[in-house]
Image: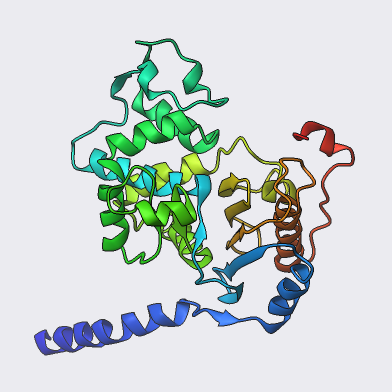
Amino acid sequence: MKSKIILLSLFLSLCLPICLLAQTKKPKNDPILQKKLSDAVKDFKGTVGIYVRNLKTGQTAYLNADSIFPTASMIKVPITIGIMDKIEKGELHYHDKLVYKDSLLYAGEDILGSFKDSSVITLSKVMMLMITTSDNTASLWCQSLAGTGTAINKILEDYGFRHTRVNSRTPGRENARKVYGWGQTTPREMADLFVSIQEGKLISPAASERIYRNLTRIYWDEEALSEIPPYVQVASKQGAVNESRSEVVLVNAPSGDYVFCVITKNLQDTSWKYTNPGYVLIRNISRLLWNYFEPTSDWKPASGLEKYYAD
């Protein structure tokens, strides 16, 4: 009897990894989708990087997926990861009460920047503002609390992200900042970062889940999110500076989750209007992917919705 148990245990130990491997879809290039992406960017006045992966089927398509681009505000996701690392180590607590000082102000239209000096706010709310409304004052405060870009970059390196880095206010990265600004990444790495968060692989399962929840509550929803039904959960983060408009999105779609990242640089049109080609491209790619992965869906954005979006 004992020998049978040993043999059964050995059989399971050999077969279980094989079974699990069989259930995991390896990435495979989708030539039809690849052609659609190429057609979508054919006349674009700027440099484009795109990475798409269907997490259920393994279908992928990409353009310049491993080229380095500026993150702009997408770098706030790695900053969040840096804060979560401190929380998991017990050096910070999610609901710590913080005291806002005018010296933290980053000039702009931030919510946190409108606070009075010595106002009290919890760390959880500062992190929420950083992600959901992309508050720059909150983000730079969080970057400092996380141990600066140096500590955040070390975490990224430890998790195998070779190109995604914080540049701003980070010693030794001054030259990279001149080229890419606040941060840098590739379309593939930013998409993979979102997948790792969804799968509970960054910092801890609990920290990843908390990050993912915040990423599903984005205020800025007039680009990629406007082309996805409002009843479908989506995790996303945008980034924009004059010559770059970008977005990374993970869609919890009915037929299977898919992730995509669209990053642009060297835009000829640097306007901040709804019609900026960078914004238009993001909307077009998002619409293309929803219709491609959900071909039976008859959902369309409501007519006249544009008046609710910024000019």
